[in-house]
Image 1: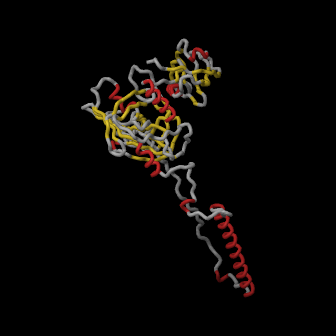
Image 2: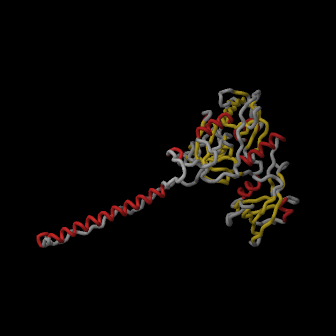
Image 3: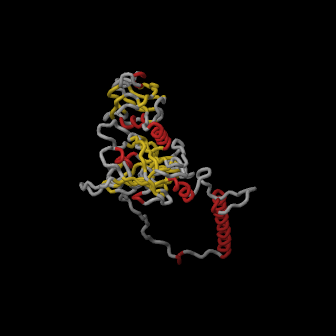
Length: 416
């Protein structure tokens, strides 16, 4: 992330692109070379009664073919448009049902959500930062990404000049309340405002792949921008940047092809009922010219949002106490080059893993229904849970025997 960037995570695919191999097969024509055919002079003309009989036969044959084709066409038409017995006729515009009960059109979604999304701008004299935020309360409580406000909270820069621009064009100062780098969530408040429109909160646990969604925010400072797409995938592993001496962090994100660009971070990902299902946080980017060290920004259809069920829990804790807590297993883990899973390299004495008897050297492969393929995946799965949650771990013990164990997660509050 660079100054002026609104997105925290640049996912850079390692492949150079897709190549379409057309193959060497072409269109082949098989033909029969001309040969000798009997001269029409050598064919004797049949008697007239035979010619008349043949004509009648061809007419009957033609009628049979026409009747067969008509039957097939009628059957296809019936399958495509079955008769509506006992129902009033419908025009073509109302024949297609909406995909979700009560779902809005995109313009209705935009009208509902736009008043609840704001533009955030920060400047410390040398650099400026643009981002987006969503309104949680009528008196101006706003949720955004931690990386959007990081320059305000790192203590190494002069106090930033801040501004919140509402959808109707009004501006106000912005006071940062608290941040959580692990989940990339922050909250603040627009100063001296009231009567704002809080965003409707939905649920990310009910999302499914292919579901239409819309992203609302201020890419490149363009206030009130709406883009639409679908949920492309769920549980994509994202590792936000943290301080070098901080504990590693990761979370599972919603992947969408709704365009997200720098400045969209902290904005809303909503369903077709206009309910918030995610906080836009990251875009995937591709490297520029080889060896030039240039990264080309701009949506390539791979964008990520923090699931709202996790984000709202973190935001509520930040508002109440100024700090957020995450699930803790009490282990040190790393990826294993020779096996799919998270290899336990250390177990904290008195921690949840120690209490459950999880040994050093174990390879964790699953947490509840979530497949664990790496050390980062284990961090994401554990940190996304609320402290006190009971989970089932599947693992191979140090000698390779498959086992399961029930663990009640602790809290990372107080850990650095």
